[in-house]
Length: 352
Image (cartoon, rainbow, N blue to C red; front, side, top):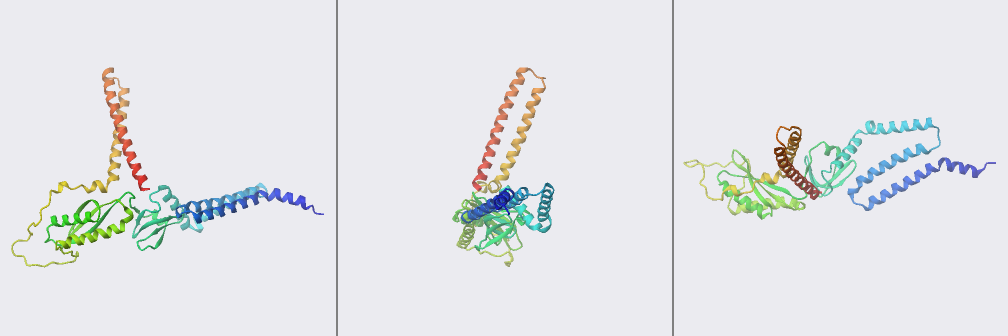
């Protein structure tokens, strides 16, 4: 007769660990699904990654715990490795490439959910960063899924969370004094609640002049409204002065008699009092250049101190005085580098 008790004990010894691994894996997968249902979308990438790793570990654990000889176990492990490699390289290269691009984007942390980004013609706010795609909400409130491979292979413009520059362009005729136009455009930017406004002359066309007015917007969540408001205020200010807004293809024909250049009808203060927009636009690049120059000076000064210790050409008193002076400069450079590093870190934290 069959001893069912002995058979049950033997099956429990042989397959108990494998059954335990299956039950544990199923429980963890169910827990991940429950967490995904209550957590925000920003955690979905991590949950997807954990699920993939859990499935791989479960398969590996089953091979290691099932009762089989070492030769068969080795063949199964080799087969699993070949299948995994084939999935990554042969069966679905696009999926694997999107997954690797997702890892790269997450590790770089260039943007996060809630940020405004623009890639090629796509613009919107990030709503989700997944393993294979990134979801953005466009200006029409529609949801757009962009493959991570596309994001990693194209330039990404990320709007700073602590503020950005809002601008608009307009073309006006040559018969209007540019001082008057600049004053009206600056006033329009101030009416739109933009800080530190400035005006550029972008192009001198055949029939019209292209102007660009810009200003700093601190609250980036109102980016779309700020762009629209700036254009409205531009029209209001220009129309108040009876200035006609023309297109680049507009041709204004007139009979030229004597005077060609119009008389100046508006007087404005010296442009030297206006803020320099480059200090606002390229703040990070300027800080990076200053930090690089300070680090180079710091390295050169350390080398000079090292040479001063090695060469004993001067007297001990002169060497001590010179060394003390260079040490003070070295400490000052170190403090300056630390201040710039902290400023860059604070800017990055405020963006995140």
